Image (cartoon, rainbow, N blue to C red):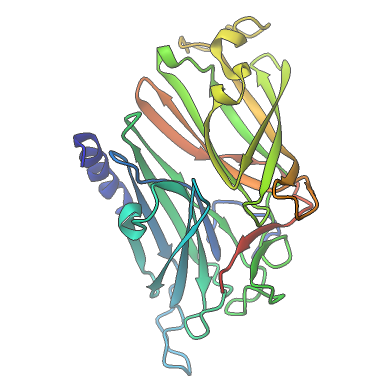
Amino acid sequence: MSKFLKSALAVAALMVAFGPSVQASGRTPGSVLIYPVYESSPGSGTVISITNTKNDPSYNQNTNLNGVVDVHFIYIDAEYWTEFNRFERLTPNDTFTVLADTHNPNSEDGFLYCIALDPNTNAPVSHNWLIGDEIVADGSGNWLFGLEALAFKSLEADGDPGDADGNDLIDLDGVEYEAVADEMHISSFIGQDSAGGVTSTLYLVALVGSSDFETRLDLTIYNNNEQAFSATHAFRCWDAVELSDIDSLFDDSFLVTTIYDSATGGLLIGTTGWARLDGDRAVDVVGNEPQVIDPPFVGALAQSLDGFASGHLLHESDAANAIGGVLDSLQ
């Protein structure tokens, strides 16, 4: 293990030691958690944490604790989109923290989602008490940043089956579970300048239910003077892409050629902007399914400035996506 990763994970260990709406908020407990990225390649590592906040130590007729829940961890590999599964039991007020490469030795990177399961039936259950986060140490770029897991509440009564329609899928549609937002937003970015130590990585998770689909996004990129520019980006299943590789519109070298506001309040490192991301369509590249219009997705952004990094979930529009997002419950 590299010296950087040892130091990063030592810091990470210290850091980890801490009525439903129809659209996910990302800040309150839920029954499904999406972790937008894990990295386990040589020199890198990811600390995954999940907590059961239900404070109910009483017993039920099955002699089980009322607050206990089983959690299904589903890791999706970035290269082949294969799945790796783990199951963990959380008692009331319990927390579980693990290194991704220990929990899933079969994959170096991708994304993860967790589903609350009924301990008696092993089926998805409404248990809106789960919260989580992750700390990513990227040795290749000497990055260390944290992300909250994106939580989706079940819209069923507490303890009722989560897969209400019985289709063995987690439907993020505002009926079974909270819906995905219609648009995702990058609230701000610094003009990309790799030579100057400014780089940003966008992590994207497609929620169209199959890795056979290529999700195509429309981007509207604004400089800090409200000028708008258009770009597109396509990916399958999951993506980790630098903003500069999406389009040079994100680059400082382009933004300085626009009519921009140079009064940055003391920020002397370049230009700034923000962006809207909207699903255009998802196309089945295998050719078996019709295309999906306005496909749902979620994501996160990590930004590095001279080796110092920060990360956050993408911000969400108020409107819910008309097409329900889908995750496989693997029952």
